[in-house]
Image (tube, rainbow, N blue to C red; front, side):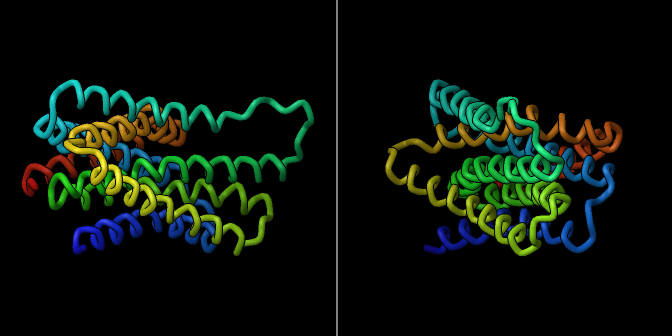
Length: 246
């Protein structure tokens, strides 16, 4: 029960980072591009460290190579299909600027919600593997969700959507992370000897997120600050993992 409470608590905090990012934009407006680039790339660097230093080694120790490979491949595939679902065909009818901004914000919100489920699973599965690993991943996801909340809010605010509707949307999105954590715990309980598979699944999902989304998005905003943020994030969390294993 204690582990369940801890997993739900840290996954909820990670999810609410999206809401916090939204509140910052509602109060102060969109931050500078170099700040966004540093945050997004920093989250990518932290996630890369988590995958390479913690998730994959833990998966390898807990299960056979075939199970690890299958889990990693399915994690990549899941995120690829989720991303493909968000691709919108070109409309034959022209949209107004306000409609385009509204659609952009809602698409980003949908993408965040889809991504938050495997991220929540990653927190739960990792916490089951090692006492502090879930907390490390939750911190990485918090860094990731903060600029995502900003990215959702900025176009909706520009589309003149009421502030309380934007805030409510981001609060709903936030709870997809603890939902994913619950699904991860249920999967572990109902599938015997599956820890290595789900650790690798989380690693695959996060790897897709890093290289298909976080790195390209950060480089588009400011390549130099993206490199700086990614390097600091990777080195910082590698040192934490090495100095405080388990």
